[in-house]
Image 1 (cartoon, rainbow, N blue to C red):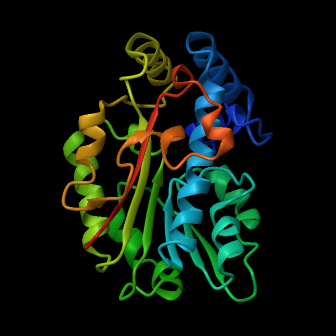
Image 2 (cartoon, helix red, strand yellow):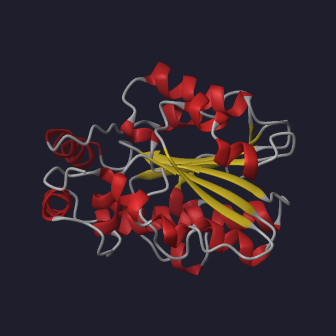
Length: 260
């Protein structure tokens, strides 16, 4: 594990106020904050978007199976904590490629007795390996609806064809009634600041990319977007905390869609 090179999961952890990061991660995060001072607010808004989407899926859509790729370091409430509060029988498989996430995965495995929470050390670019893993095969029934969660991960895939292909291969393996939840960086909110922040990330070896609303919406092609569609993450079925956030403080789009 390279601790002298910034990693996206640990940078994200620092921006959320976590402690599981190293000097290289903190330096990279603070460089981005100097360019885009609102970055901590944007990251927190994205995390809260995940919580609202997960709760909606469990409470309103009756989903009890979740595949969360790009999990990041454990930050309470984790996805399984949100959905198992609604339905203790929910089953969650987490996936991430950062060795330090693997080292802290025990915090992701605190499932209710009725449910299950498991972790795979794997990469989004290998969807077939993820789907074929014992953790997925033993935990999730792929004959029943599954929610695929791709929160704050697609901006690390530059190539549009590759990003679309990964989503397609994952969703093709899931049955009707499944959902896709995703969020990713947008350049629409502040093109110059986001562009400079992305360049800074890239210079640190964290390859990332901002996208337009049209590009983000295209990730849901063939699926039925759930209202309110693709929006800044704090506009998606907002709670009081989200409503208090100024639009200038968020540079993430998010959405949820159904596979019919």
